[in-house]
Length: 377
Image (cartoon, rainbow, N blue to C red; front, side, top):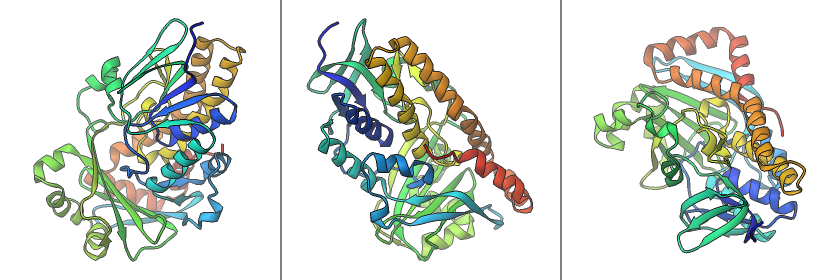
């Protein structure tokens, strides 16, 4: 076998990439982690993490209990006609900004010996006969195993010609995301999803008496409006709860964060002979319960198998096959339910009917919540 620079190379340092790097380093492997941005930085994200990942983050060295984070136990959903559904979240979640949690994980990774190369863009990643090659902006790195943890439509996706890039535009693959941090008169223990035409907006508390307000809508809404502020007045303000939030809250930064070409189409957990985790193997709709926990969970599944592979207990192809099977068993049904719900949210009459029906049938509401929230891992 050719000599390698590291045992593991991970491309993309979101929650999946960071936690997987930490777990593999804890097992004694040399790990290099690439991130195109510089830590710490903000991401467009709902910033609500379900409790299913609490113990895993503790095991990664993040002392959540000492941070006095808001614990979220209730869900509210509103339709455009003003119907408001409130339901208990049996599992629940906690609020923390990506700026804070990603920054803490990056510090922890460096502290235990992961080589974190931020501000480093990757131009290529390739499986060869007996190793992987990762082409960085100013270097070429050889690793025994490469893991893809990139999001959205990365240049690696383009290079690989992944099929989801060529799919026709539909209600799952042409969204934009907008995020604000605000100070608002809003309960600490509630996550709310307020619907508007062709979109929905979530709000929940994070650290330092701030709230994350993040919404998804179609690119067509933005094009029709001509700008973000105009779009908010034209579409989001039609929901009375959102209008109140926008008019009565204090916005913590002058311009929102935004992301375009957001896709929730199906993707593969393994592509080009490379295992993928987090958003790289399927952009997770917010209505699946919690994409951040699912992203970290995918990394945990892979970590166990990577350890077996490097210890020569299984072959590389056996590892990739087992990971594909376990990923589908763990997440396929949850993603399917989330996409069904996603397809109905934002359609005015369907959302009005759907929320009204759920309000009258708490058993159905609880069933959907259970199907879209996992268990501790």
